[in-house]
Length: 283
Image (cartoon, rainbow, N blue to C red; front, side, top):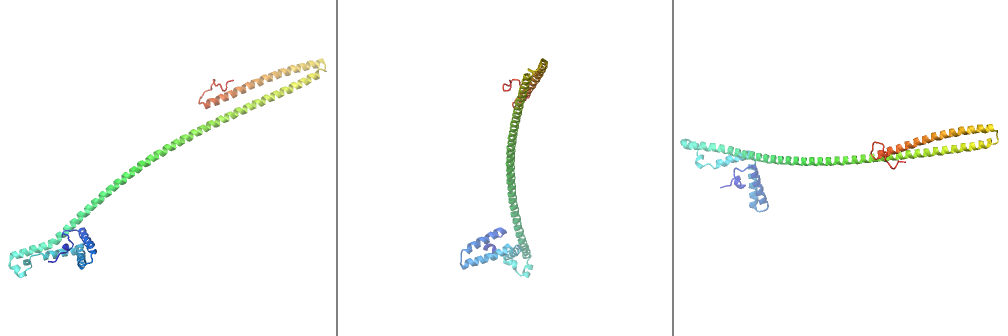
């Protein structure tokens, strides 16, 4: 008895397309390693079986033909003999119905298997997609947390840098203010020294003029001597008044300089009021 196409591929009649393809690949791999004529013939017959069974329409036609070949011999008797026996006619109808229903059932079974496999593949793909989405979400969350940590660290570093820059700027401002105050104090001290020197020079010049005039008046009349004495008294009084005024101005300048020094000292040491117990500026 000749082998069927399913037997050539060593698969059941309910095999799906994947099983048919896998069986043909196994036979092809097995026969390609041999160079015998029997192996080549087996490979050719397996290729023909694969071509027919891989096509759904040709497979249905083959299944019908295979089912018809498996019917008993009495089912294939002449029509006259069949009509003469009601039981034989009933069996013939049953056989024809089975012959017609078998390919349809086989096709429905194969279709159900394919749909089931497709559903399983879709479920696997959905599971993979869900797992990939969860992995992607976890990676995104991890990246977001890392970005937040990096951002917070960067903000802290920037705040520390700004605070350090502000502290340096404030210290520089304090140093500049201290240097400016010292320069102002030095300028005021030099101004006072120059003023004192000028006053001393004027006083010596006036004293010299007076001495010269006194020498000249010694040879003049007593009236002139008396007038000169009066002028001398007036000059001495004026000089005394100027000296007192200059002394008052010097005292006021010294007090202003002392107040400026106290103010600079208090500003450097953070005291808002005027200190009265600073040994560095007390006379």
